[in-house]
Length: 86
Length: 123
Picture (tube, rainbow over the protein chains, first blue to last red):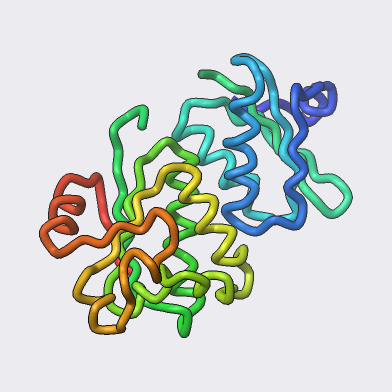
């Protein structure tokens, strides 16, 4: 279930992953790596300049069992939010 | 891997075809990030990518350098299987000329990996 923009803006991520400038599959690999460093139930935030990252992270979350929360469009990049669920 | 899924990516293009050479590594990285076991199989011109140093010079537009992708998938546990007859015909000597982790195999092993996989793709 995705969050509203207001809810996303109110989130404090346990870990922010700056993958700006990385091409596919870089942001996904960074997300995978970062997810392993936070407790279950925590939110990670991935920054990406690759426009397909938000849909890729959404598909990945559904595949592996995490919760994709949504995306905030920032200045030249996307902020993608995922909750660790396992 | 957690759910027992496995994908086999057959790589048949070498450094002269950077995009065909790179995309299976991209797919392998995404699969490994998704807890899917990965076998990368190298046949025909694809075996050149397993020759020491060759990956360093391959970069397809829009993708990360092949060297980085190779390091990533190897670190995440991908199997790198290289066709024995294909390296012999190119004068590639194992293990001296091959990247770390590359394993030389023959057709029977490829068949075993593919038939036991969830799916396989050839590039």
